[in-house]
Image (cartoon, rainbow, N blue to C red; front, side, top):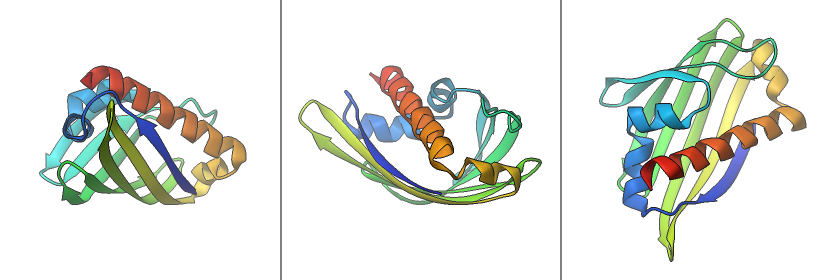
Length: 144
């Protein structure tokens, strides 16, 4: 599954960057997120549920922060294996300042196996993009 897109924030890139790496802000921004915590300086564990029938969860997801260039770039590796299938993904996030706020651009590629692979279709990709739009809107409100 390949996903990419942009979101315009009201806040500056430094605030967006810090919000993305703040567990409390992320937890409040992600629909269905039960908890987020740092396992160490470069790994985050999140527990989430989804609205997708047959894949509700909760699921534990490990997010590795593989590269960081504050306040403009974050690369995340997402890993999840277990009930419902597996996800192995890489996401690059670029944040640039523009007039009126920062623009976040993301480019992600995920390999899906098992039941979760059913999401790799136009309807599933649309649901993921809608969820991302909600996350970005919530994140924008949380850091504004």
